[in-house]
Length: 298
Length: 298
Image 1 (spheres, each protein chain N blue to C red):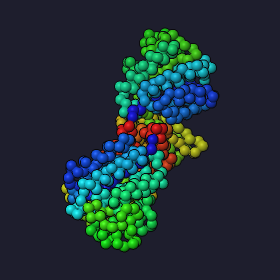
Image 2 (image 1 turned 30 degrees about the vertical axis):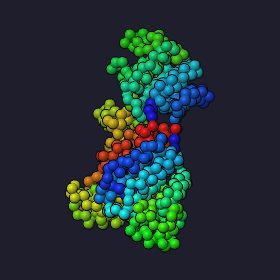
Image 3 (image 1 turned 90 degrees about the horizontal axis):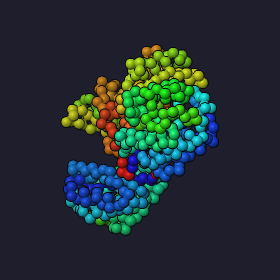
């Protein structure tokens, strides 16, 4: 059995009727399974996760995107999260029996179709057409509000679709990437400066671990602080490395780790490294997990 | 998708042609997947693992058993492992979307069929018909050589099949059980007494952890010793408990843990406890693993 995941981020996080209508498009495609819909009202943004056979997932993503374009008007959108379009980002993620090259191909054909529907499309991450377009923040810089000007710059000619500004829908960033692991470590202390200090040591940008983004977050209701992370490639840096590093750094400051949390869905491969490192068990492979064998079998 | 596992142990571990012929019976059943065939010449025994839809697995187990009964003659069998029949033990193990009650039912109907073919059958573990028959060692006590006498005892009337001795095939123990986890911890020391001492503290029989069997093993070629374990129900005692206990006990004796090994296949559920305990992450669930979601979806 072959599975591709798709995780569109759309610029609607408040109207449950619209969110449902958009997410439900996925269920019109046999063989595609809607796994999760997470909305944030402050961000005014919803993250939708679905999986299935690669071509079916592409078609489902297209239905979903067209419904979002119909229902969302960017001219009225204000939210806490950076965005440049109604369908802001559409990453395709290889999960089971799918190579990255195929995910890239799916991203490219999806982007071409979306372009034909009048949306300016930029390809990012593994689907990027140049190194300047590899990272989402550089494409999205200036956001929706700066997009009209940005499109006048020949360096920002879209990869697909019109090179003029679409005020209702903005632009969409489409790509293929490795699965992202959202992982947080909570510290038994109320001083946010400590979480920020440790986050800085952890994140790659400031000399920390490869493929890791991190920030300090105040968990006021819990009376704790948090080092909140994204591991963009768990093969480069996996959970045990950052957990143990944070534990040590906290200890140096006489702070205890309260616990940690894996947020949302992760591929089985993430657990392989956890077992190997804590049980001194370097030979352990996810091919020893019965469920993995069942999936290979299909 | 629903999956039942079956792990027959047959009394042939030396003749590759016979072993292949027996194992291949499984592949004649669509929807059943042969996962593993492990033979041990010293034990003169082979463990065969396959999975699939419950009824298909039962039919595959029956084909395999009949082929083993045809090709194996217990009158000529000598090996290091306790056994009482050509098809020695046939456990059915619920894996995905199958309850224990259904595995028990499958074991009972399989046993009835095997009985009709002239094999004396005893049900064990969850499929046992009385508490004295719950554990394999008590049923198998006396082995093949003592079976003729044992069958004369009314307390050992078989659950299915003839109550007279079948010299060519012996008897078969059939049951349903929770997945077994084979787990070993290696110690950087050559003194086997240390492994035996720690194994004794770990195993339930001598006051240790519930559902754990353990023994000390000399790994002469590696210049190490090993605490070799079976965790019969990982919900009662999981890997981190025994690993950390052994590590501490070794430390008390100034011995270091070289590493550990998970042998063969384990259900995904085993990894849940490992992640929860080492990452202080009690909320973590295997339902956060994408591969698990895919299986639930089918």
